[in-house]
Amino acid sequence: MTRRPFICGNWKMFKTSAEAAALARELRAQVGGVAAQVAIAPPFTALPAAHNALVGSSVELFAQNCHWEASGAYTGEVSAPMLRELGCAGVILGHSERRQLFGETDATVQKKLKAALGAGLTAIVCVGETLAEREAQRETAVVSTQVRGALAGGLTSADTARIAFAYEPVWAIGTGKVATPAQAQAMHATIRGLLRERVGGAADGIRILYGGSVKPDNAATLLSQPDIDGALVGGASLQAADFSRIVAAARERV
Ligand code: 13P
Image (cartoon, rainbow, N blue to C red; front, top):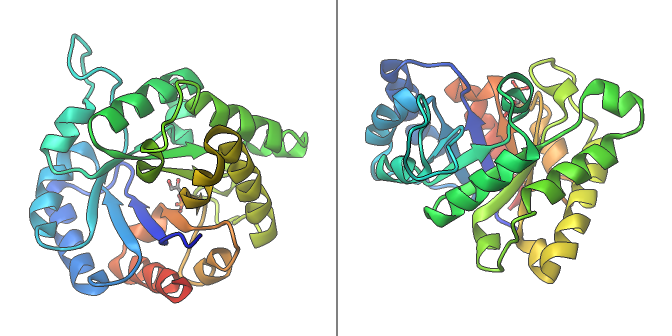
């Protein structure tokens, strides 16, 4: 089954609204009309400005997190329907920074995934092991637990069109230490095997992105692996030229 490559830029806590609008305008000029699915995930506050800058473009707007309830007494939180209202097509869930710094767990990721899909959003569920876990050869166990945990609430075959996974080894995020294509491919194949246990053949249609120090000069090699269907890009998504070159690498895979 061919899977449409998917490149998403995770801007983390970078870019004011004015800066986000400027970068989104640059990106729409540089990556429009490509066969790959392309998305950017600015901070919450910059979503309206980025949305305005992207109107009429194929570049999609994603958020970086959401709450699991639609509304309620949850000070400081933002819900999935609120993101839909702002024009978001999707949301990143369970990023390792949220797991490590903000108490995100497999259980909260599972609830958020249900909320996101229920609100009509696409979800990118992030999984990945720490350096200590890899050194203890526990990476497969850790990532398997995270994938199973996220899907514990069940997944219908209709949901599979709106879910993607991102394998982001924590030791490769922001460090310049990229996983080798073989290391990444091995984990992506493991994840696809777990998805097959859940949804059978529909697993072959689910995109699994790689994240962790993806740059213009390593993107093509990573994307040439059979189970690497795209990239979740941090630092290199903050410069239009770098992000466009990564998108171009995905286009060559189509
Ligand atoms: P870097 O590309 O900066 O390593 O970040 C990866 C990441 O965390 C994307 O979600």
